[in-house]
Image (cartoon, rainbow, N blue to C red; front, side, top):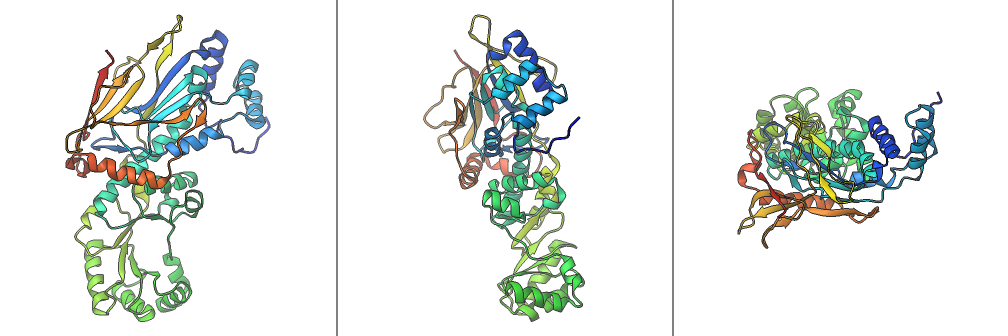
Length: 437
C-alpha cells in the first residue's frame, strides 16, 4: 500500500465507523433523511461545579477544510475502507447544513446542548469525531484554566505547558487557557496563529552554561534589559537574589522561583528584595502549580504564576466527556421524529433542544433550562444560549478571543458565589427540561 503525506484536509480526522455507517445508509437510502445531532455532556467531571465551552472557533476552522480531496479518496480506495458509491459521494461532499452552539467562553452544565448540527444524516454523522475531539479537549483545558484564574484572584497566569503535551494540543491548550483568562503563553505558534501575547526569558540551562551565576545574569540583562525576569533558584536562592539585584539594579523586572516551598520562599525573597531597594521587582512562581497550589499562595507576596503540566492535562479532567447523539430525524412520512438512546446509564433525551440561562431579578443565574422541540417559555430576564454558527453551509459566526474572554467573565459573574469554590460540589445550576406543548 502507498503511504501518502498528510494533507491540510481535516476529513480523515474521522473514526472509520462514521464512513461505514455512511456507506450502509447510502445503500438503503436513509443517508438523506433530515437529522439533528447534539453534542452534550451527561455530567461534569467529578466534583466540578461548571464547565467552560472552548474550541467552537477551532471546529469552524476545521469544518472549512473538511473535504475529501484526491489524497484522502486515494487512501480510502486503496485501504478498501468504503465502496465506490461512497467514494463518489465523499468526493462531492461539502457540508450544507446548519450548526448552532454555545459561544466560546460560555458556561455549560450537564445536558447543555453545546453544539447542535442539522442536515442530512450523511453530512452530520461524518463530523462526529472531529467535533468531539476539539470540543472535548479545549473545553477541558478552559474549565481547568478558569478555576486557576479564580484561585489567582487577579494575579496574572502564564500558560507554559507546551513541553508536557502533544505539539498540536499545546497550541490548542494555549488558546483555551487564553479564553479562560490567562494573560500570555510561552508557545510561539499560539502567538502566531491566534495573536496571544507570548512571554519567556530563560531556563536553568542558561545559568549552567555560564561559568558563574553572575555571568549568566549579566548576559541576560545586557541582552534583554533590566526589565527581564531572572531565574534565581539554580544554586542558592538568597545568593541568587543578591546577585540579581547587584547585576540588574533596583529596576529589575522580576525574579522567578521554580522549586522549593513557594509560600515561605516568596515571603523571604520579597523581604530580601525590599531590603535591597528592589521594591518594584515582581516575583513569579512556577513548579507544578494547579488551582489548589495557586489558592495556597493567595496570602504570599507573589505577583504571577506560570502553569504547565496541570493546565494542559485538564487538572485531573483531561476530557470533558462530551458525546454526539442523534436526537431527531425524519420518518417515512417526512415528519420529524424524536429519537433517543435508552441504554442503562447512557440514556439521552430526544428532540431538538433550545437552551436558556434562567436569570433572577438581580441577574443571578437560577437554572439551565432546555426546551425540547421548541424554545422554553422565558421572561425578559432569561438569556438565550444557542447562537447560529453555520447556516446552510456558510459560516456566520466570527467571534474573536477577546469576545470569548469577556463572555466568560460575564457568565461566571451570573453564577451563585458557590460556583467559584474549588472544593468538590454539585453543578452550580440545575438542568431543567421543558417539553414543547
